Length: 231
Image (tube, rainbow, N blue to C red; front, top):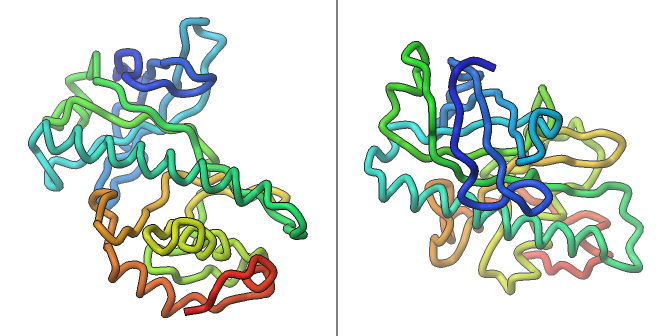
């Protein structure tokens, strides 16, 4: 995987234990906020504990200051944590016939250890990165950050976004559902969360983000079964 690596993660990753990772010299993808690298993560069990991950390094142009990077990555973990909790509740709702399930990838923060002089990760001043479980080689956007729905998928996955708003009494709305689908199982990477108080970092568009979602969202049969109020 190249010569880049991290120290053991500061927060637990899979199986409630820390992992360390190796990752490629050059990014697989550069997005609006992050450089994204392919990697492998390992626990204390050694080589055979290896699992496919992506490493996300916040771009310098976004926030070059260390304290701001640490703050933003903490928000990333908070988004994942809330999304996992609400997805678990949504998946376990009784009395509703759903034909899909939602899973959010595990993630953790870690400091860079060895970075190859050849890698563009060397040029990043940011010392901390995100280790995130890989959910698939090819990712699809099912619901955009604005709430736009990918109509090529038949499941009412945007109902989960509406459910998150309903469950949190209108304080939060989970959006930007991106990942991989297989037989009704949606394995998703960290979403964005729009919140009344703008608590969730760079992708949180606050009340404007919530309002924008509902301009695109059309309540469906599952919303009705769950008694989710239309706005």
